[in-house]
Image 1 (cartoon, each protein chain N blue to C red):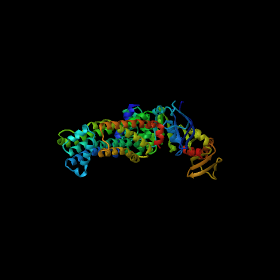
Image 2: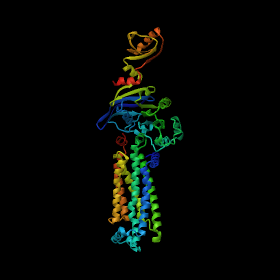
Image 3: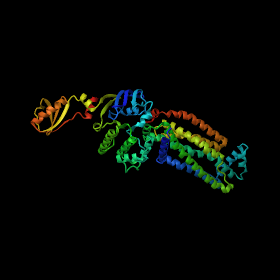
Image 4: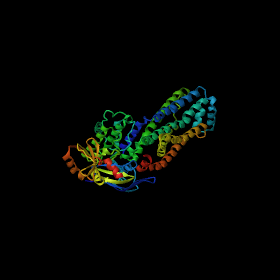
Length: 277
Length: 298
């Protein structure tokens, strides 16, 4: 691996992110939606008593009673009102899966733009004619997806922290956000998920003819996240720290398996004959 | 002269379609070779195979002692390529494109980049995104990109497409100068045959994946020029379509076209014309590259 080549590709790709409006919108809109609007609107609605009509109170009460005895259940039962329980549950447990959409969608858009974009703009040919080895090329592209994705995710998390704690401090008399689950989401699940999305993008980009088609195929990866969010809300699955650690581990294993498959692309002639026409 | 490129019995097929069939040729180091042929003849495939970005079905290739199949990176380090599509990043400026590629070729040198931008008339537009460049400007930038690393072998696929006459002249002059000063071996693929005529040392005529003829212009001319058409500007008047035993026709006022059996008879014929009248011009009109190309293909 040539680090000079890796850095050159990563810098070039990161500069190119701003040129694709769809990627740029994702980088701005997703943090705004899941980091600010969703938590702010939900907390304000609960605080102003507008959730009774949505039956969320009943749902939370049911969830709390279903909880296994332990620290979280004690903590929830110690709150004076259902509104406190709803906000605490929402901020620390239910928001997580939605928040994961920020790295997933951004990593997907950035990596697809980077991989399919080279093919669409006919620059892949120039790259493959240059003396860059494919490991350096892919690693450069991986970094160019990882850095902006993680930066946006962390920025979204900080914004979310300010919003949640800012809106709930007076109600709880202290900071309720984040808990340890969030730290695991940020530092363990997000990087694993981002790596998986990048590998998934490499797989898609090899098969799709253009960016639009790749996006449609890539949309599939969002479905497990949505399923996780729904499971969490309905009480089907509770994203405890142990479960989050286990999810990260499973993602790591899938990453390792996929890496072997993606390694097939580490052959210049295979990539050239399939991608350059 | 040392051999720069040696190709023997090269075959390549895509999905059952034979693109190259037993192609063999050699290129001397420091020469300029024109790769000629219609679309689909296999010119681009040869360039790709020689750079090791695709693999042959069979055959042998050696470039400066390296085999593209097993040692492609070594070849790519000493070669520069201009593809038909230019292969530039439209969102980056001209200078940013050159900086990026110079890093990939491990030859980053800001002075060299500025020299090339100046040489190709892109100094003022260097900070503009390449997406806003004209076709000619993109082509010139692609050429600058290809010679950034002072390559030992340069592959140019239609390098003058999209250039205006001044641009074409400039590029051909630059290529010739580079070839003479640095001894760069140049492989040129082009449809515009008259442009190649002034700079190529050797030609490879490709058709349907096979090399149907190769050699210098003189060699090809000697082989294929069976009848010489000589245009003469003279005050001579001819009657009956014959002069000195050769068929002749009046083209326009003071211009005659002779059909001659070989170039050997030109001098005696001109002497005879001068004995009877004045003569200002004499030119063989069917030995240009394009005419030879069609004769080879026929």
